[in-house]
Length: 198
Image 1 (tube, rainbow, N blue to C red):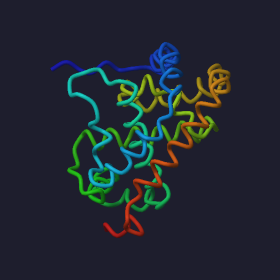
Image 2: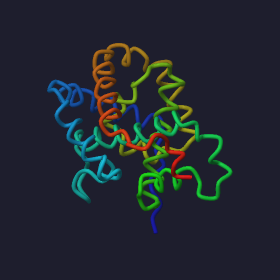
Image 3: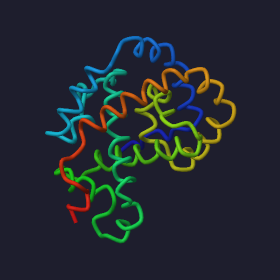
Image 4: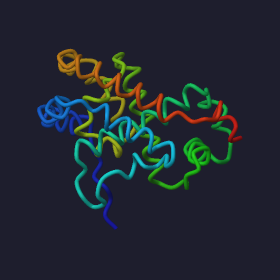
């Protein structure tokens, strides 16, 4: 059985730069309708955003955009509920607990996408640019498989030589912030707290 290629921080930035023009064209049109539709659908099927797109096909920017919103929403909700420390001692584990709360089967897909959301939140915090993860959208499929040590290197590169690219795309980052807020608000659970799942 062949092993998956181990990507590097440079691979992520290379694909990000190559896809930047397409990303700008993607953002040239309002995505509010798409975000509203997916957020409402996510209330019925939490896993919807992860499997969006055709199986076996290279994901489109729209597919990746929906996955990004889903991953970040999961990670942010867990942060808000402050489970990061209390759940580690639980035998279910972090990803398994979140899956159970959302009524989903826990498997490598949900675990990997949840890890991706946490890593993206980590990148945003350490780089110091909220919602900068949208710039990485063209490389999201590879980012899912980026080792932890390369995440740290990616943060260093984004904070250093890549910062001018983030600065020059400030408007796109701000626009994504609005979409992310809309998605989080509309797809919010009706339960008062995820602690209801304990």
